[in-house]
Image 1 (cartoon, rainbow, N blue to C red):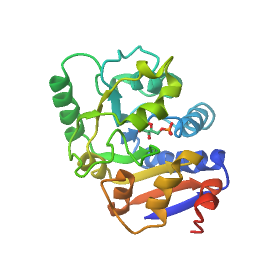
Image 2: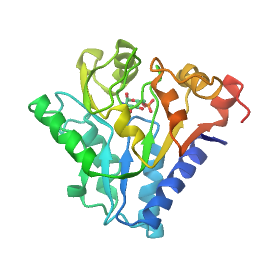
Image 3: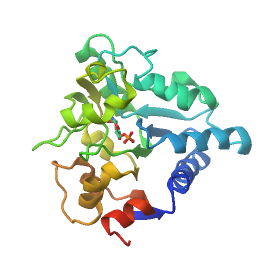
Length: 244
Ligand code: GLP
């Protein structure tokens, strides 16, 4: 696993954008795996800027997203489809028909079947990952056993707490989500994990200071991927005493 310490959040995002840009330049019709949450926002701002100012071309790129809340319509402001449209897709020249976010509404089994089929048909060049405070990736919450394939997950209370800031009230946070499974995440040719913020210290410690891989902290699984890059901020590295 390659670990990069970025001087600040902006640098972290610029470096993350560099890795995604490299894939798009090398293979203009590649499939990129995308993530939601606040961590990737700076990367998306940077990709938008590079598309507008530096000719980074997404016209033939396709994408798949890690997860979606069950019960939220695509135009709900907190749905991950809405997040992706408003933070990235609406501002770059990607064909939205080539972007896939699992469906939050409708029959869960059917939606999962479609999600799994889309993932099986794609070869993801690079999968971007944020990290939950409890170490979750996508919505794979800590557990004694994790799912290989896309599935419906009950969101942990601590994740509901963490994500409540985006909703009018905690009660509005959906309790279920559809998420890629670990097998599908690990199938990406490259993984790019970005981690910053004070509530990520525990997860960062397990990821960077311990050799263990444990389903009780799902992000530790990225250590097992053959082409895995983690970018963390200097602030977080200092807080956990990680020197590279
Ligand atoms: C949500 C998403 C995760 C994301 C996490 C962390 O739970 N399902 O994919 O990594 O939030 O978000 P943030 O980057 O805002 O801390």
